[in-house]
Image (cartoon, rainbow, N blue to C red; front, top):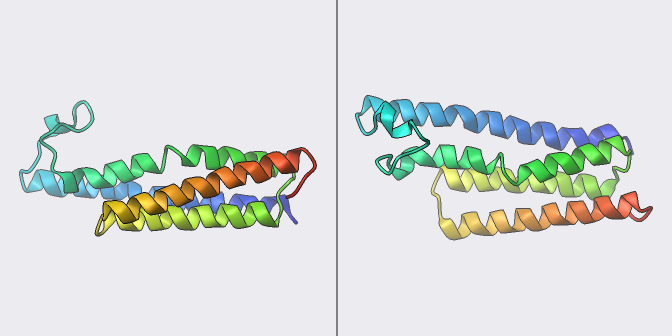
Length: 142
C-alpha cells in the first residue's frame, strides 16, 4: 500500500477545519451587525456577553485544533515510516468521518448527547489508530 494514501484523510480534515473557520467570522459579524455583541466582547477571547449561538462556531473550530493534532502526528509518522496499512487507513478515514459528524451536530441542532457520543467514539478510533501505529512500528500489524 502506498504510504501517500494516509495523507488524504489529513487533507480532508484540514478542509473541514478551513470550512468551519469562516463560520466564526460570519457569525460574529452578523451578531455585531445586530448589536448582540461589540468588539470588546472578543478582546480576550469571548466574554460572557457573547450569546451561545455566536460562540458555537468558534468552539467547534477549537475542537478541530485540539485532539486532531494527535491524528495529524499519527498520520505523519505512518507516512514517514512507510507503515501505512489497510487498518490505519480505515481508522484514519473513520476518524475524519466522525469529526465531520461531530461538526455537523455541533453546528446545527447541537444535541449535547449526540455530540458527546460522536466525540467519544472519534477518540476511541484515534486511540486505535495509535495502537495500530505502535504495532506497525514494532513489526506487527499495519
